[in-house]
Length: 418
Image (cartoon, rainbow, N blue to C red):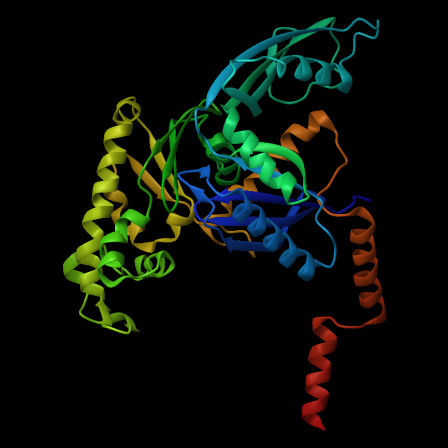
């Protein structure tokens, strides 16, 4: 019988820490808990106050543990796609034990040899991009266990990122008394959840991770991440004029963006969408004023994206996939035709995490499942003993008929009859 495996992932995002806890059971993914904790310790994807970040991570983990009933000891960590570099390694593996049969340790041997490759002093290996196998002249992406041959080749794409940034992010996790189960580039993790990696086998895909202070553009083709670039402005730039005018917080600004009802200024009415009484002024913002201020900024952002991606779009059949916290801004769907290629606003469908903020966290679990077919690690994020005790407690309650929807419904009906 398959065991339930619980994994947790952390993304140190613009001005907030995001935690996703999910379980994998018989190939099914179930979101158990998500947490988002405000944090002022990150600016421009750089940690400027380690203490603030560590405190926010501890708060997120503590909140999740209180709800779940067991400790989280290890996490996946998302690494920003800054200074991303690729290296393609072709590793030849000899089967020298006389069996002429590929076994798991042969695959592990080839993988471990490939990841030893150093690209420079300022970058560090993060995760594998794509792995394929050439056996008896045939290429496959499936692990060729038990196939007969005397040697085979592993074609491995490796992804590297800024070394200083990796160490700074990892140190925050360690200072929060957590172990790092694995690292993953945020762009690659997102592409796992959105299926961009699969889609890019048929056409070039430009993935836009729209966050508060930046937007990461990832270019995917042939089932792999090719390159990444960052636009300095995120969704906060859309509304900053109005937040400065009325001295509103960034959180209020984000909520205001979600109240732009049409991509056409003339279709937004004079209905008041926000009221606040300050000491020296009363703030009243209408849908029309909001649209008049923000829509031109959104169009300019799209124009900047179009300009940056023109060389890719000219290749033909390109597609944009927009995700991240900014993908929750509904008016972007009205403006998809402004892009110079087909554009899709990705909508997360996982129950319990239907928010663009958590796409990266969910994707890290998929990335781990892929590489763990080689690693075969049995480590999980939760404390094993406490997780088993929690499962036993739930099973016992179910067996005894304690709790559960059916019993609660019966009790309500019986009490009403009384």
